[in-house]
Image (cartoon, rainbow, N blue to C red):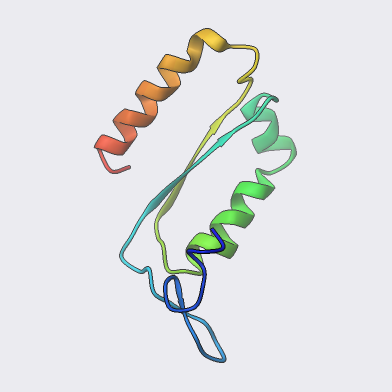
Length: 94
């Protein structure tokens, strides 16, 4: 991300940074050991929201959709399902 955020690519130089990646959307995929619902409701998905606000939206990327995948170490048999879901979301541009 630091190379993408260098001046002239994602942000224009100046006193106030100007976003240069407008008109683009993103999907943020976060995997974790804990249950995703616990991360979302107890912690407020703080790191995902921070990344969205302070990196993606600052560069002009909107909308940003998030997918939280929890219990990744406990459910090795579910990996294909997650990958299929993400492939489908990507194919539909959502």
